[in-house]
Amino acid sequence: MNSGIQNLIRLHDDEEKKFADFIKTTRKKLISAPKVAAQKATASNQELIVGLLEKQKVTQAIIQLRELAYDEFLK
Image (tube, rainbow, N blue to C red; front, side, top):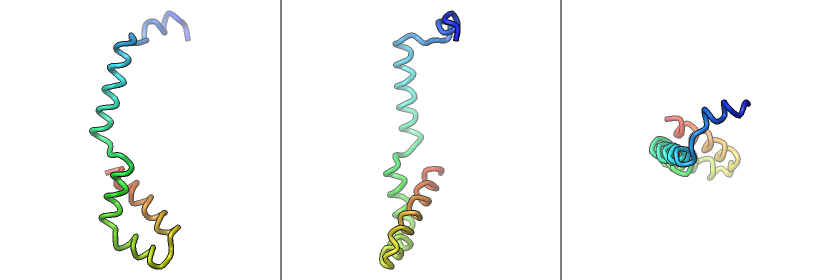
């Protein structure tokens, strides 16, 4: 890219830091951590997960939990 254009669209260092901080704080407010989504998915589908684990279907339990956690993330 042309250096003149780069200078035109580039943020100053302090503005870049402020923008990065804004993105981080806004993301934390709007998007739950993966651990939180997994906990919610486990809590609301405990019977299913425990049932699979009792039947020693660990792989299936993990797959289900991943899908359920992703669904929680999308909410």
